[in-house]
Structure formats: structure tokens, C-alpha cells
Image 1: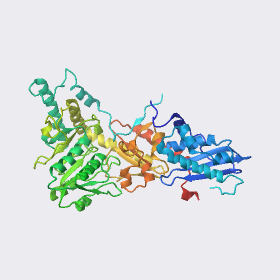
Image 2 (image 1 turned 135 degrees about the vertical axis):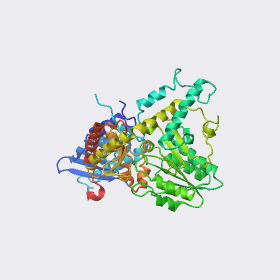
Image 3 (image 1 turned 180 degrees about the vertical axis):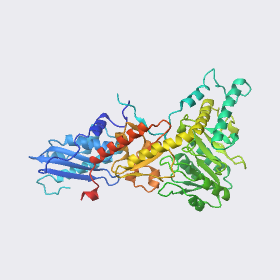
Image 4 (image 1 turned 90 degrees about the vertical axis):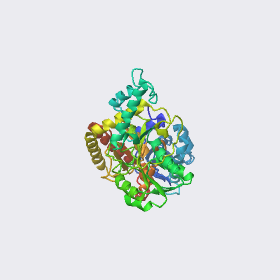
Length: 131
Length: 393
């Protein structure tokens, strides 16, 4: 039986298996960064545990289309080992390219980027407040 | 091996009944009634013509019409277009106002928009939260220059039933034509064009285990109803629909309606029972709501809103079930259902809707499995969703 041709293999795998879904373990060094799309109800929470200045665990919760959920899952792998600077500079186009996400859904990746920016702002030791 | 997906998209189209396939097969080969039904100068043509006329009688009988009221088309879309454009263009010097509803099929809405471009005015009624257009709404919308009211008998997305009999009698009293799109109701509900004062009735085969590509328009005979054709050529179908008649398709349509008439009294209660069993199972899932009137609905269509999961996401998760989010036509686009939006559902809730439609071949086991799978996937996807911003504090 043919898989749904609208979605790439990696999107389908991540959507089915949901690797990275949930919350980071423990309380110490954990930040939760959230972003909500203004128009369509999509929302994501990134849960990052940070030790010695790098992300040691990344998890997500997401409501939205399959691309959005798969991209949030992909992001949890991408952020592993990242420094605050790398997190702050992350660009949504990287996920679009890696997962072959169609342009019509780019708006949702920007919501994902908003959550990443919020994580950088809430990084332990910065003046910003966690979301 | 993984079992094939369970087919629950019968409002989009249905598998053709084997008896219909056999009827069609006998019109195709050199040993069958393959000839042009207009070639009545030889025996082959007369045999094909007899098959066409037999089918015409079978279609007519299902809706209590006379055979000569039935005009074959390529389906309900063409029948709707011919009904609306044909009558409006014929009567354009007499009346220029039409009434329809916001929840009609695009085949009616787009035809109305074309007529607006041609100078007609159209009133688009908004159904109540039940999805039903009430006769009182129609009565209020009628004007001295109203030519025609066009409403669907059964809504293709949510399955609710309009009282076309009451609306028909009302229109007849006021001298206004009534067109009814019966694509989702023919063979599933009793239709009586005489009793219900229906002037034009659009029909199709493929929603009722018949072939795609064939339908009919039932046209009032007395007094004669003026209609301008949309296509020109050989003058078939009394000059209203030129083109060689596809004998196999028409024979298939006739067989479809004959079988429907024979099995209706058994099929409808069985399918209604399965639909109710499915709804009872889904209603036990928190924040799942039925769309449309809970009582006045056709047997085979169940439309539910699932809060907390996007429709596209749920459909992909449920790829072992063949169902749709909104109508098949609308699901080519990512837009939320305009029908559910017209009923007052938010964009987000309209996106999280599922249309589950049952048919002659839906089994109790299909329904048990579908209910179990929907519950499992709703729970899985809700478990990873963040709370709404207001609740998140």
C-alpha cells in the first residue's frame, strides 16, 4: 500500500513514532519555552534540560499539522548539545530543508522558531524569564 | 500482513455493486447491447435503446416520476448546473432572483456565482446550528422576482435532512420553482417529486454503489418548465443534453436505483444502527461532539468534531481508516470546512472534524475497529499537545 505522498518518509516516521515527545526529566536546569501561532491554533512547548551551558535533553509538546509535529520532533534531536548561542541563532529553514516541508506550511515553522528564541531568552543565567 | 484500510468514505463515493457491474458489462462487448441507442434503424441500436429506456423507467420509479421526466447527465454536478443555469437563462426576462443556502455543494454554489456574474441576485440562507434550512427561512427570503429555490435534500458533509416536502409545497404556492440536489439522498430516503412538489431533482449513481460518470435530472413535465441546454450537438435527450448516450453507464444507473429500491427497507435500518453504534462509542471520548441535528440525519453520514487534535493530523494518524475531513472535494485543500464554519464552528474546531460515512458493505466489525482506532489516536495525539495558552497560566 502506498504511503501518503503528501508527506516525506522522515515526516511520516517522526509523526508515527513521536521521538522526543514529552517533558525533560527532573526540575534542575529545565526550561520550558512556548510559542502559539496567532491564527490557526498551532502551539508548541520545548522542554530543555541544560547542564554546563549546553542542552543535554530536549523534548517537545505540539498541537498542529503533521509537518509541525514532525518538525518539533526533529528539533529535539537538533538541539541536543547546542549552546545558548546556537539555540538563539537557529533558523526555521533548516527544518524546512531537512524534512522537505512545503512552502504552504512555512508559517508553522516560524512558530517553532519563536519557541526556540523563547528558549534562548529563558536560558539559565540570562536576565529573561522562562515562558 | 497489515489489513487494508477500512473504507468509511461512502459519502465521497462507493464501491460498485457486483450486480450493477454485471448489468454494465452486458452493454459493452460485441455480444452485448453496445450499439448507439440513437441508431434505431437496426436491431442493435433498438436493443441498446431499450436498455436506456428501461433504466429511465427504473430511475423514474425511485422518485415517483414519469420516465419522460428523466434526462441523463454525467452526474449530479452537471444536473445541478443544468437545473440552475438552464432555468435562470430561460426565464431571465421574467425573474432574476434565486435562493439557496451557504452549505450547498460547490456544484450549486459555483453555478449561483456564475449566475450572479450574469446579472442574477442570489440569497444565501444560513442554516441554524443544526445545519437544517427551515421552511420559514425560505418563505422569508422569497421575493416577487424569485425564480427558483435550490437546496440539497441531505447535506454531503454532516448528513442532515432538509424538509424538501414542506419547502416544495411552499414554493409551489408562491409560484417559485424548487430544485433539489438529491445526490446524497436518492435511494437512502423516500423521494416523491409529485407529492413534494419538486420541479427539478438532481441525481447521481456513484453515491449508491453505482458507477461514477452518470446521473440524471428529473424535470417537471406539467406545466412545462423552460430550460436552456448547456451543450449542443446531436439533440439527444430532447435537445437538452446532446451527446451519445453511454448505454453501459445508464444501464448501471438504472440497476443501481432498482437495487436500492429493493434493499432500502433492509439497508437503511442496518446502516443507521451501525452509525448509532459508532456515535455511541465516539461520544464516550471527552470533547467529541456531533455536528448537525442528532435526529434528522441520513443513515450513512456521521460528522464529529474532535477538540484538541487537528483534522489533517488525525486523518494521517488514522491511515488504516479511509475517511475524510469535510467533503472529498474540500479535502484537496487545507481549508477548514465551509459547512462547519457556516454552522458556527470555530476555524480550529472545523479543522478538527471527521466525516465518517457508511455504506452497504460496512460491517459491524468495521465499526468496532474504527471506534477503537479513533479513540486510540485521539488519546495519543492529545497526550503530546500543550494546553491552550489561557489554561497554561
